[in-house]
Structure formats: C-alpha cells, structure tokens
Amino acid sequence: MRADNLTLLTDLYELTMMQGYFKNPTDQTVIFDVFYRDNPFHGSYAIMAGLEQMIHYIEKLTFTDEDIQYLRSLDLFEEDFLEYLRDFHFSGDIYAIPEGTVIFPREPMIKIIAPVMEAQLVETAILNIINHQSLIATKASRIAYAAKGDGVMEFGLRRAQGPDAGLYGARAAVIGGCIGTSNVLAGKMFDVPVLGTHAHSWIMSFPDEYTAFKTYAKLYPDACILLVDTYDTLKSGVPNAIRVFKEMQEEGIRLKKYGIRLDSGDLAYLSKQAYQMLCDAGFPDAVISASSDLDENLIYSLKTQQAKINSWGVGTNLITSKGNPAFGGVYKLAAIQDKDGDGFTPKIKLSENTEKVTNPGNKTIYRIYNKNNGKIKADLICLADETFDEDEPITIFDPIDTWKRTKIRGGNYTLRELLVPIFKKGECVYTSPSVMELHKICQRELNTLWDESRRLVNPQEVFVDLSQKLYDIKKRLLDEIGSEKEE
Image 1: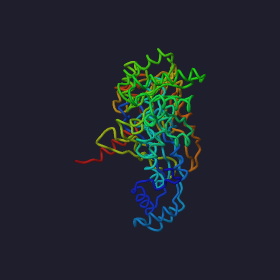
Image 2: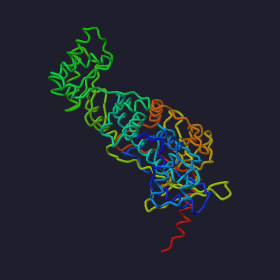
Image 3: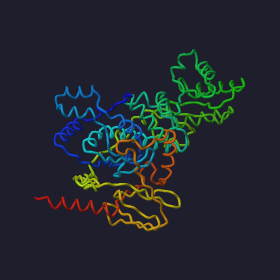
Image 4: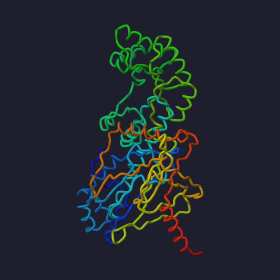
C-alpha cells in the first residue's frame, strides 16, 4: 500500500517493448504527452491532481534484485537486458501542469522528454496515479460547488476500492474542495484535517439515546455533533440533542462546534423541522450536518429546496466517483528528436474518430485570461518555442471549425504558461505545495472559470485552441498521410 518502490507497477508490454528497444539499439529521445479527451461528468473542466505521488514514483524508479529475479522467472527477458535494468534510472525531463489547476481536454497535462525506453516504462504508473487523483479532485470540486460554501467532508474510506484509493482519494478530495477527511492515515500522511462524529452503534450500546448523547458531549464538548436518526429523528433524536445542549450551557460549558447529523429520511423536510426546533430552543447556530449517499446532484437539489443543512459528509459517491468511474487520460507519442539533436520531428496518431487524432510536436500551453476580471477566455496549445506579446492582438480559432475565429485586442488579456519543469535530466526541480495549500490554489483556480462553465448541467465549454503554427503542422501531417492512402 505504501511501497517505496513502484517500479513494477506497469503493464507487461512496457517491459517487452523496452527489451525490444534494447535489442535494437537506439538513442532516440522522444516526447510523450499525457492528456484526456473528454471532461468527466459531462462537465466543462477537470482538476489536475496526483503530481506529488508521480514525483515520488519517478525518484524511486529502480529495479531491485527481487524485481529482476521475478522478471527472470517469466522466461521472457534475456540476461543482458536484465543486467541493463540493474542500473536503470530515469534521466529525462518532465513538465506538468501544477496540481490544483483547472484543466481541459486535449491539452498536455504532463510532457515527458526522455530516451524512448525510459519514456515507455513510466507510462502505466503515471496514468494510474494522475487518472485516479484527477478524477476524485474533479468530483470533489463539483460537490463543493453544489454545497455553495458549506463545508464538505470526505467520508469514503470504508467504501473506497482498496486502501490506496481511500488514501489518495482523500488527498485528491481535499485538493478539489473538501475541508477534511474521516481517514486518519490520510490526515497523518498529508497533514489535512480529520473530521467525524459517531455511529449508530454508539447510541445503541447505551441504555437510551439521551445517555449516549450526554456521554459523548462530556467527552467531546468542542466537537459535539450528535447523530439523531437512530430511533426517531424529530420525536427522539433532536429533542434529546437539545436537552444535552441545554445542560451543557447550564453547566457552564461553552458550545464551540455543536449540532446534529442526519443520515436517513427526507433530508430537506427533516432539516427544516430540526432547524426550527433548534431555533425555538435557543440554538440557531447549531450545525446541521447530513450524510446518506450524497453527491453533487442531490446536494444541489436539497439546496434548491432550502434545506437547512450547512455541513455535508460525502462518502461512497465521492470516493468511487459515481457517474464517471474512470478518468480518460492517455499517453501518446508526440515527437522524436532529430538525429542531429537540434529539434524534434512531430508525430501524429490518426483515428476514424476525429477527437482521437493527436496534436503533434513539442508543445506548451498558454492560458488566456480576461485582463479586467481574471476569467479564462481560452487555452492555447502551441509549439514550445512560440512566444506572444500581451500588448499585441492575438487571434484564436477552433481547430475543427476553423472559421470560428476570435481576435483579442492587445492589452485586453494576460497570458500564463501552464507547463512547468518538474524533472530536468532526471533530477526533481519542483517542490510540491502542501495539500491544504493546494486546496486554496484549487479554489482560486475554480474562481477563474465563468459561472456558466461551472454549472452542473449543460455547462459552457471552455475553448482549447491551437496556434496557427501548430495547426499548420498538424494539417500538413494529415495531408501527407492522406495522400499516401490508396483504395
């Protein structure tokens, strides 16, 4: 679960291809892009996450004696190749969009520039790490958006698909918008707040509900959230909670964080009734927390019904990414270094599906912001050596429907290059922010989206365009390949 060396976390064909390259010697340096084609959840964006774990993976990339012995046992690999693996390490460059950043389809989230064998080996693990955490961070951002400023807690460990999914899913959820997690190990590993209340079994283990509440309140007076639906929410649970809160006041115990949790029933109706009961008793500031198979759609519905819930515990549907079980990140060859080492020859993958045709070459991404309000106007994928002057006009166009063009006047926009260096010549040159810092970064990033692009249903697409130079190269390659086809 917390293995320090994930070198064999790969598909077999990565290793068989490596041996093929080894047996047919080449010192080719290549460029691979990691990107995704479609936004998850029918949304208009995703959240980049998983970079810190990817860095750890690359830094620890080495074949142990045990690894080599296992590979030998497969009877697939020759001894000279296995001996080569003994001294293997990653020596290339990696660029990536920082964690917490809003990202869009078809743009490189990560760019790997390395000898072909090294670039091939790291494909599977990078996709595994980035796909999972970006998916959960994106789901969390949608849930937090639906909650409209209320705190969202990640409660999914017991339903996660294994310990790693629970741990790194919790990390990603906090980046995406959750204020904390119930996962204690995640709290320790990533220095994030751990949160929780108590279970129905706590209530049932006492002679009566009142005694269970009072005992819990004495133990945790500063975090006294009582689960009120074990027997009867409105006739028993809420009245007993109010009784305990009154007794705490009478005993001179200052109520800091206190309230109730609803875990079943009609949450809109029950929360309104409970709120009125709490107000009538003099506790209008009590927290009303809810759990019970929540997701962004149910939370949004409850908010529109004016439910009096101000804290949300989301478990299964967050940690398992209900509605979108996998993030569609792919890893595609984009260029091969020229023999003289001075440049790269762009490569393109064709497909019968237009959206699966790749963007060739050594690329970077510029985000174009409205200078007045800081909102995103578009992302521009261009060649790595292209530069732009913010004081000059810039024309962007749809790479499919090229007649759709927009000219942005100079001085009306700002640019930010998204890809930053992570590894240079095999050495990490990047320091990852803490998870709570990434949480803040992500919130700032989400605020650069227009409201129309954040809505949960039929959001407005954010444009991802190609520079004229990149478009011309792509078109030339498509024309060349097309001219070679014969009927």
